[in-house]
View 1 (tube, helix red, strand yellow):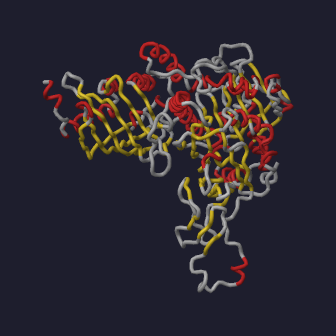
View 2: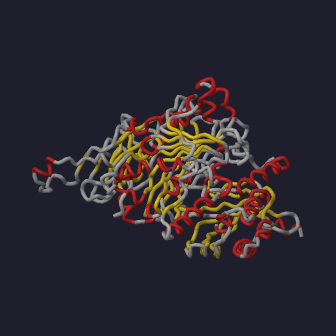
View 3: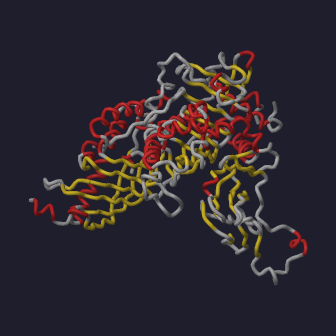
Length: 448
Length: 171
């Protein structure tokens, strides 16, 4: 295996940060990522609203580990390995459901919604040994499990920091999502899943990438202009909250965008926005300010793309998207995506949120395919290792500074690193945070 | 002529319309395709709530595609040919098959046409082939000139895990 320094060329004193293309297409490295990142630490599992009532459950993957998130009769939410202790079959094959008792479809071992074994079919007469009886037959609890403001996290490894330590300052950014309603956040019914033939880290980076917007999405930008004109004529087309935002224009010289980096690989990129009638939250602008203060309200109306390393992205720009990244192989990734919105949202606002979402975020829409096709071109290009080092991590290096800035101070946010600048800055040092965490997870696995 | 329009759309006539729509997409004759729709067309591809239920209320649930009005389809066609969309630069080669056609009476002289479809596509950019399949539900409305126009089209996509791209002409 290559050494860490052969994969990540991190020499800040010399102004150098480069990534080796092998990090994106080497199957042996992918195997290490699954073991030490996806199965070796905290992952986002879903929203609590996916199992709203007693005995509700939903199923997810933690790397390759099938997991079950289930609420018992008293309302306590727990996480389990979704696999029968008997022969290993998945106890809950469906994506979600409601059951007081889960019965294994293979040999009918049964479990209550707290994961306790209730019955082993024909236990008497089974000629079991005392050693078998002494063993637990309950569902295996996930070694790590926790919920923050409705965001459910789990870990297939016990060797993780407490969840709140892992999330750290980013809890304040999850608050900006959860606080949009006094009741919290919910998934809009209907999930969309797509795959692309590229490495999972391409999606990780793209969410944080302000640089690609005018290059990859000019057709979407021009369509907003077309629709603006058509709207006047017909009243049938719809506007987008992206129209009023200037962080991607390339024209503004004042501070309109920036990035924050946090421990454990979490990052935020943002663009300055303001309430406009096209925003689904527009009608709430005043009440949000009253309840949360103007600083938090203003931050809620900023474009915000948050990554909780390694698999959760909350993108609040054209609409609000919750993305879960599921790596399949070094060169294949599955994305599970949902529209999210504040509980109790008005009908017109919810409709506007959904329409903007479909147009921008769906793989059947008008923006995401222009990204995923580019990822696939990157993946093909990564094979060209004549010069293995990628140059996509350098923008902003001469400007990055430790700690936060005025904008962060307004919501008492304390990042490790920050950058703020004009719309052409398009910081790329934000990705360095992903790879510093990647290197931390691989310390002791790969030689330095 | 108007008396003939008010009669029920026959199955051969319905099939002819569906086949011509599919052929227009396969041959990328998008102007001809757009001309088959009413100006107020409702074009809808639901998402799935779970393993068995597609979403049913576009105002409160997510769809894969939902458009009210042909202008939105014109936007999509414009984007495909704009030269500004990376995903549209090298289009997939597509072949639709439409069958199992059933015609039922709709409201106010409209006809509801149910069918099954497969849409094979080959992406020369990556040398990958895939097939989308599912059901169509068309509502055809007579336009007064003896033509039947698509007033609503619902695509229920069965294999909704989408490999990279699902643009209108591939469905």
